[in-house]
Image (cartoon, rainbow, N blue to C red):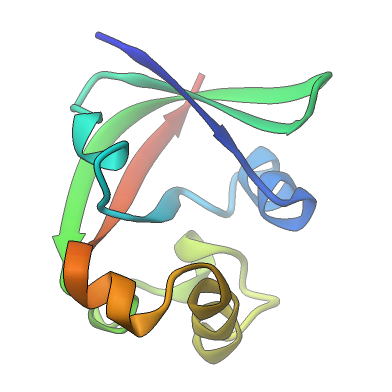
Length: 112
Protein backbone atom coordinates (compact mmCIF):
# COMPACT_ATOMS: atom_id res chain seq x y z
CA UNK A 1 0.00 0.00 0.00
CA UNK A 2 1.32 3.40 -1.03
CA UNK A 3 0.22 6.93 -0.23
CA UNK A 4 -0.14 9.40 -3.11
CA UNK A 5 -0.57 13.17 -2.86
CA UNK A 6 -2.83 15.19 -5.13
CA UNK A 7 -3.96 18.79 -5.12
CA UNK A 8 -7.60 19.68 -5.70
CA UNK A 9 -9.24 22.96 -6.55
CA UNK A 10 -11.26 24.21 -3.55
CA UNK A 11 -14.66 23.58 -5.16
CA UNK A 12 -13.90 19.91 -5.90
CA UNK A 13 -12.17 19.41 -2.55
CA UNK A 14 -15.35 20.64 -0.86
CA UNK A 15 -17.50 18.28 -2.98
CA UNK A 16 -15.27 15.43 -1.80
CA UNK A 17 -15.40 16.59 1.82
CA UNK A 18 -19.22 16.80 1.63
CA UNK A 19 -19.31 13.25 0.29
CA UNK A 20 -20.79 13.93 -3.14
CA UNK A 21 -17.61 13.54 -5.23
CA UNK A 22 -16.64 9.88 -4.91
CA UNK A 23 -14.69 9.46 -8.15
CA UNK A 24 -11.54 11.49 -8.80
CA UNK A 25 -10.93 12.11 -12.51
CA UNK A 26 -7.39 12.20 -13.83
CA UNK A 27 -5.32 11.56 -16.93
CA UNK A 28 -3.93 8.01 -16.82
CA UNK A 29 -0.35 9.28 -17.07
CA UNK A 30 2.82 7.85 -15.58
CA UNK A 31 2.00 9.16 -12.10
CA UNK A 32 -1.59 7.83 -12.03
CA UNK A 33 -0.60 4.44 -13.48
CA UNK A 34 1.27 3.83 -10.18
CA UNK A 35 -1.99 3.88 -8.18
CA UNK A 36 -3.32 0.50 -7.05
CA UNK A 37 -6.38 -0.74 -5.21
CA UNK A 38 -5.99 -0.24 -1.47
CA UNK A 39 -3.61 2.70 -1.85
CA UNK A 40 -4.28 5.93 0.05
CA UNK A 41 -4.57 9.32 -1.62
CA UNK A 42 -4.09 12.48 0.41
CA UNK A 43 -5.93 15.34 -1.28
CA UNK A 44 -4.93 18.92 -0.46
CA UNK A 45 -6.87 22.12 -0.85
CA UNK A 46 -4.20 24.04 1.03
CA UNK A 47 -1.30 23.22 3.31
CA UNK A 48 -3.64 22.88 6.28
CA UNK A 49 -6.75 21.44 4.61
CA UNK A 50 -6.32 17.80 3.61
CA UNK A 51 -8.44 14.68 3.16
CA UNK A 52 -7.45 11.02 2.97
CA UNK A 53 -9.23 8.39 0.92
CA UNK A 54 -8.70 4.74 0.07
CA UNK A 55 -8.69 3.67 -3.58
CA UNK A 56 -11.49 1.13 -4.00
CA UNK A 57 -11.73 1.13 -7.79
CA UNK A 58 -9.81 2.12 -10.90
CA UNK A 59 -11.94 2.84 -13.96
CA UNK A 60 -10.01 3.07 -17.23
CA UNK A 61 -11.53 4.85 -20.24
CA UNK A 62 -10.34 6.38 -23.50
CA UNK A 63 -11.78 9.80 -22.61
CA UNK A 64 -13.73 11.60 -19.91
CA UNK A 65 -16.69 11.75 -22.29
CA UNK A 66 -16.71 7.93 -22.44
CA UNK A 67 -16.43 7.67 -18.64
CA UNK A 68 -19.30 10.13 -18.16
CA UNK A 69 -21.65 7.82 -20.08
CA UNK A 70 -21.42 5.26 -17.24
CA UNK A 71 -21.71 7.53 -14.17
CA UNK A 72 -24.04 10.20 -12.85
CA UNK A 73 -22.74 13.72 -12.20
CA UNK A 74 -23.79 13.34 -8.54
CA UNK A 75 -20.77 11.08 -7.84
CA UNK A 76 -18.35 12.69 -10.32
CA UNK A 77 -18.63 16.15 -8.73
CA UNK A 78 -21.97 17.36 -7.38
CA UNK A 79 -25.54 17.59 -8.66
CA UNK A 80 -25.12 21.40 -8.79
CA UNK A 81 -22.97 20.91 -11.93
CA UNK A 82 -23.80 19.45 -15.31
CA UNK A 83 -21.66 16.87 -17.08
CA UNK A 84 -21.03 19.46 -19.81
CA UNK A 85 -19.66 21.94 -17.26
CA UNK A 86 -17.39 19.32 -15.72
CA UNK A 87 -16.17 18.17 -19.15
CA UNK A 88 -15.35 21.77 -20.01
CA UNK A 89 -13.31 22.19 -16.81
CA UNK A 90 -11.48 18.90 -17.37
CA UNK A 91 -10.61 19.82 -20.96
CA UNK A 92 -8.82 22.93 -19.65
CA UNK A 93 -6.42 20.64 -17.75
CA UNK A 94 -6.39 17.62 -20.06
CA UNK A 95 -6.68 18.30 -23.79
CA UNK A 96 -8.47 15.78 -26.04
CA UNK A 97 -5.04 14.98 -27.49
CA UNK A 98 -3.64 14.11 -24.04
CA UNK A 99 -6.74 12.02 -23.28
CA UNK A 100 -6.22 10.12 -26.55
CA UNK A 101 -2.53 9.63 -25.79
CA UNK A 102 -2.83 8.39 -22.19
CA UNK A 103 -6.47 7.54 -21.60
CA UNK A 104 -8.19 8.59 -18.40
CA UNK A 105 -8.90 7.04 -15.04
CA UNK A 106 -11.76 7.41 -12.60
CA UNK A 107 -10.42 6.69 -9.13
CA UNK A 108 -13.23 5.39 -6.90
CA UNK A 109 -12.71 6.51 -3.34
CA UNK A 110 -13.78 5.68 0.20
CA UNK A 111 -13.13 8.57 2.56
CA UNK A 112 -11.07 7.77 5.68
